[in-house]
Amino acid sequence: MKQEIIKESLPKLLRPKEYYLNAIESKSIYSNATHIIGFGFDGTACFRKGTKEGPDALRVISDGIEDYSPYLKQGTDEINQFYDLGNLNVGSTEDADTNWKMATDEYFEIFSDIDLKKNKVKTLTLGGEHSISFAPLKTYLDQYEDLVVIHLDAHADLRDGYLGHHYSHASIIRRALDHFKEGHELIQYGIRSGTKEEFEWMHENKTIKLSRNEFLEAVKNINKDRPVYLTFDLDYFDPSFFPGTGTPEPGGEDFHSFISFVKILMEKNFVGCDVVELSPVIDPTGNSDVFAAKIVRELLIALN
Ligand code: MN
Ligand code: MN
Image (cartoon, rainbow, N blue to C red; front, side, top):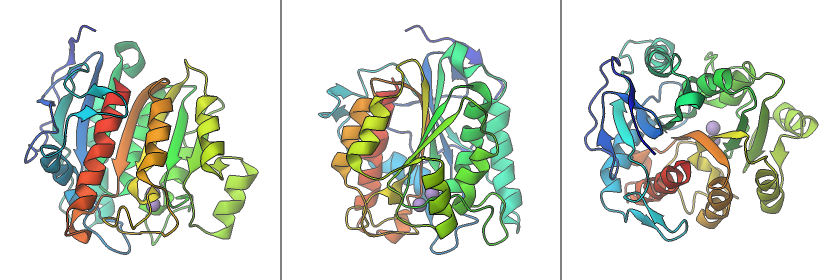
């Protein structure tokens, strides 16, 4: 599909160490295209930090993986051109909330005045801790009145703020719910850690899917025209497969559960996603970086 520049005067973002696979460095937004953007923030992380290095680690390691997906039977060189805008400017003040807000506002400045739906503009945001997903989630919820948000995570992230941060990684889904309207829907899967109240809420509101089959069925049943946004916390995976994350939880999913999901997602109206919580420093083998880069490759192809 023809791609045209629809916005040029973007704020000046930071140049990453490398660009993701076949992404073209861009200072503009194109129609009919996916835009990668890094949001390397880990200011509210409570346990083990390091996710601020996530976006660049993912891009650097992507050079070492095949661009062909044998699962989706396509390569990133066969899909529409996609772009890498670089990294948002996370503030460097003493106050984590201020630093987060700087980059969040920058994201809004870039995307909130673009008609994502009409221009078929898609975003793939690389974290960073999960609090960074507020920027894309709010943008998509404001623009798509019938959005389905799929939340993959070990944690419910439904706390109303955590350790003094209103926009904490542990409250991101609660903060997204602040912007949910009548037509929006939430599907959660992989969740195996949270408070009693969080689990009660998920059961009452039927957002949580309790088995792989139940989850995949729920995704299959999404109407083909309905826009789907994915917020993907990588601690969804079992720490034996994916140790490079700050708050690992045993009993998690494997790569094949993700592949079963992404094959279905590919047939849906998949409009955007974020991939968060890779902390390269926590897994010095670098295996988690490779794992995450493959996840991003599959999602890029599915977004096409
Ligand atoms: Mn999590
Ligand atoms: Mn999370």
